[in-house]
Length: 313
Image (cartoon, rainbow, N blue to C red; front, side, top):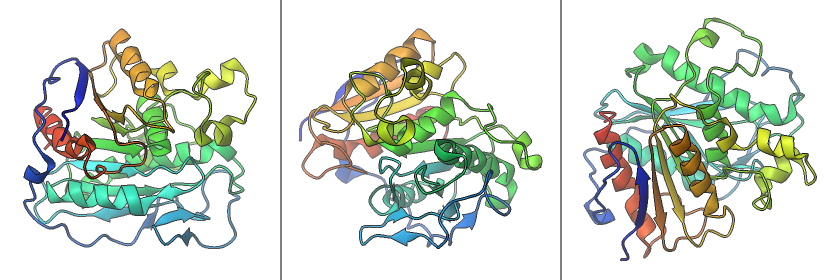
């Protein structure tokens, strides 16, 4: 198995790369809970699908009338928590291929996992493209606000996103505490800042020449202004004081050009935000916890070591 090319900066950047077969599995996680709504009543602005969600044979979710959090509790919790957002180009949410396997892996190392099934912009929501961002912001506030109930440390709440879900959570990290809806209750007084951010084959920039993604077309259309393209690009909002970033991508990614993680790393470097970037030779896009027979299988173990280096686990 080829070794990963590691491009990194900041503290805790030197990370070893043992084989995935040595990945630690202390205990089997408990069964996931059924999802609970993140809003009391209709989400801000209302609208949305009239009927319940549709789940494909692969576990991709559409027609999301009620955005939810689904909890997977470890047998031996260590107090850390992670919000997870699957990708899908803002056209679906890949819970089956990305979010649920990630939740099981995290639970196996003691992390309480929260899968976010977020609203999709084109499913009739009055607030349109703001819908998933409102959900992500509300979700992390709920997790931190209910820390005692879930048995977690409110100072150890991280996020991990894939593809468009990584765009969503990358924007949440960069724009935390910029409330995107009118406050509803005491939950909205709680910090929405994550303590660690893991972005896996993320869509970062919607600016040319990297504009040919579903994320871009769904959020801002095919002919946005330069200002709008910049406004919805993660790197535009990076500023000092953000949580550390852990970035993963394959060099042969046909969907998210590898420049996406390079651009984000450069923005972090310029703003003195800690970042580590792992660029693997092969693996394509959508490999989840790793594509068999490629070095992408190594990234969860690398992430464990990185999280341990930050006293997160």
